[in-house]
Length: 546
Ligand code: AMP
Image (cartoon, rainbow, N blue to C red; front, side, top):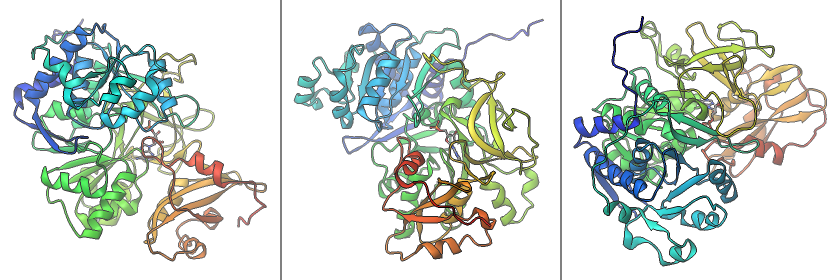
């Protein structure tokens, strides 16, 4: 027997309808590429998203056509999120930090019909337009009179987004269709091989937004002012543009200004209560606030994920700045939220050190995400917080396959292999010890590169650290530490290696340290360890492992 409940599909347009109806005057604040701070509201976003959807109709875009974006976090990008998906097209967020050749490849693979770009990214649009014949419309996200003359020469027919909208009515009847219909597309950063497209649906997006808002996840509400530092081209800014509308939270978009000073000023001025981003971005903010001895009184919590947040960073936020860190783990293939670290009632009685030992983990699975940890043969390992194995996941916002992929589905018996190496404890708290490809295999044992990096990061003279495997004739691989020193520090190799003594088994201590001016970062702010390996590791003579 079926239940007697209405079968109402979960639509992305429903999120904006809700926000405009019940939180119409709640602000959406954006630092624009134009340099100023722009203010709008959910009610106005609803009107402009409607104009935008009418414009997509007028330009002849069919249902499920891909609408590409090359844009920072801002209100126009936000409007496009709802206009494209809401009108049954597919929003395709492109990562402007990739090489133009790779961007052209992705546009062509996705078969985008239209690409909307911030003026900052006009050079990319100019470079790729001639190589993307499928794109019928190039749209600059600016006012009509801001369209540079040379842009029109380089891309004949280029349109101004604001002019397009101005010609359209501010009402749109958002269609209702199967909730499993594709809504948006995001390619993985593709550190190995070509990037792969992850295709989200209306259902997966709305369910993920519900989950993101839960108290033990981001704890979002209409009392929040949320600043996603994480870009809207990195897995939909972790779902915040949807979860904010679902809860009626105020949104603050930082645009291109991601340095510590600009972020601090925007957070202070807009009373930001929650911010989210990758660790490398937080380093800039942390340093600025430390150096200038300033605080953001409203900022209660920050979500840090995308790569491991070092315990030293979590401690600094908590103890020096009074900002609670929510460590999160996820993937593009998971929309992206998988786990988030928050304590349970039984942990409240623990002392600070024991609580902290839990808080540095990547957290517990969110309802909707099932997890398993397995060995190399696919056999389940115990959840004892010690047994290390590969993490498998499944759930309604986890990819079943890649878009237009010729390879077989990545699923193994219905489970998605994350490529992450983890331990899970009895309460389900997960600790990521490595990516499969970053783990250091020394003398038959696995050494966690993240653990070694976390120790280095706890040294006051270390600004950033990466640990990579160096081929070794005797032990197969040995850890090599790559370090950026803090300005003015005189730290040397021996002092840093001594710092490891007593913190890990002797044989796990890195063999050597290479000091570098900077560690290369990928398009989503993660350390590019594969590049470091290629640049810094050459076959070495056998080294001591005792
Ligand atoms: P992406 O799809 O580009 O966001 O990359 C997903 C990968 O980032 C995961 O599979 C992890 O390897 C890594 N990652 C994400 N969050 C964390 C975290 N909190 N700690 C360690 N690794 C993380």
